Image 1 (cartoon, rainbow, N blue to C red):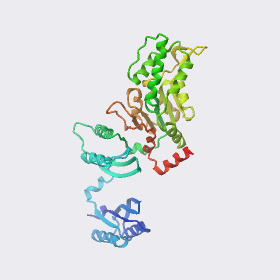
Image 2: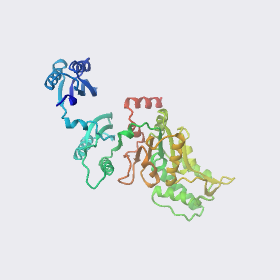
Image 3: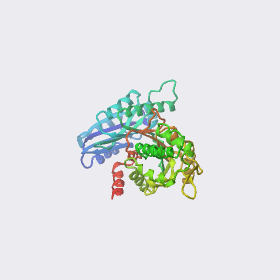
Image 4: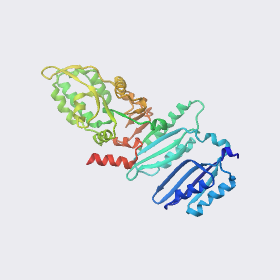
Length: 412
């Protein structure tokens, strides 16, 4: 190997003690090496380090270099491994296609085995892996390189990545785990705006069903001939499209019904924490403004868009909606409006919905998450299988120690 490409890898592992990094890097300096990449970890008194070293300007032979580096074992008590890069491998060192995979859920055997076997099947390399949370609740973050993954001839590169995402989401949905996959370049871009589709993410579905039953009963009492769908989401959409069925109802009756609604666990806590971190929060709802106001007035959100019922001077509903009317279609237009006001790009937006047509606006965001989706194969970066909306915090790239500080501060 010529001097131009004298690259060496060194890994060392063993019990931690003061001065290990100093001893290793000093030895490298003494024989003319320049460290061009390094990763070092110390956990539970176990030390590990990995380095790539350039010896292009060293006057020592490769045999002398590797022999000297192995001496580090005797001086530190660490187990040292030294590798030499072949010249044809060097141009590929920086050719990586990195993604961040976050897995969340109740801890159980086989979580890591499942994902590592999956990646091995597609020749995807795991670059880094770390626990974000451990105990009854489990969260792990992995950095994977898909540069050399197996791609079916009929698929483009983009289609192959989407196929991997879909299969990984399906794999973990079967064991009730949540998983989010983000490309590294998007992951590293600072997120500024978080948008929630309210009915599909923040409000408990059972309480929403009860609200609609109350409205249905009241509508029948005023001789409405409108028939409800059995599906909760379709029922809400039908209600908006046939708002005339509420004509003649007193607004105060609807406001009383809203007391039935309950938020998913941790919703207000999550919003307060995100606000304290500096995020802008937007709520989009196809429901009614009096519901949004009642549920979220103490949360301090920045934007809340929902439908407003027209009433007469006596508080009687006229059967019409004020403009603009919020539907699944107009939510994307509203998101664009908010982005322009805040001067943020799509890459800086986190959007959370259920992945259905009513929340299709989430799909082109920097990070799109489907919360407990009814459909399979939703085209989002990740899915949340549990009703713990606070799991969103683990997808922001913030260390758990920092997250704990925000949580503690919010609870004080």
